[in-house]
Length: 317
Image: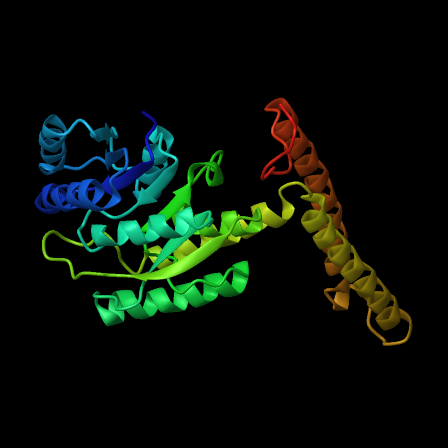
């Protein structure tokens, strides 16, 4: 029997929460969803009793599966490990701290069945520290929407549902798990955001902090760069090279002007140095762009990776 939904839960030092979460989750999956399921819990190098709690739950229910990482790799790597081991038609992700509500999963699955490729949760009434968590998150969500062109209210909510084919081949690094909706939208996938419940943390300590915000922004810039320039890197390197060489010519003519009409010798202004620096920087940028073009072609052709994604076909084997 094929599995309909795979639940992926990354866990790091959540011994007090994971057992209770799995009890609530199984109740929802069996009583409300009522379709074949699996729960993949990824132990991200926990140092408390989280792994033992998961093993005990798995011994009682074979649908609960454990992927235990050798050390703490971070939330994105843990999500990636769970997704790699998932076999369901739909993949649902949520946190292991019991702040996401398993009762919202049927609502996400309902939207998937209506034809959406990604359903993203929106913690409309977020129950976190306003100063340290909520306000910085709102600012980050606004900035991510502005840069990516994909408007979501809550990128940081881990409660999301994906069609398996939507994230097939997606590799995640850094803090990039929150950007899967952006990948999907850019590739023509259908995306919707729905309000979900959010509960205050009752047990354990939060692993989030203000230092995560700049990492998220830097990862976003990488995502945007990869989307726009992965198959045409010469555009950004060559564009910068053109601008740099153009400035070198401007500095060169200014240098001549001050020499013959402005009463300044070459050594009295920084213009000769700026001319040479900008020209060389432009040439180096062009060469880097050509090298990036060769690397891109090697990447796609050596692995037979297409530069497009097919949604469906008709009358083709």
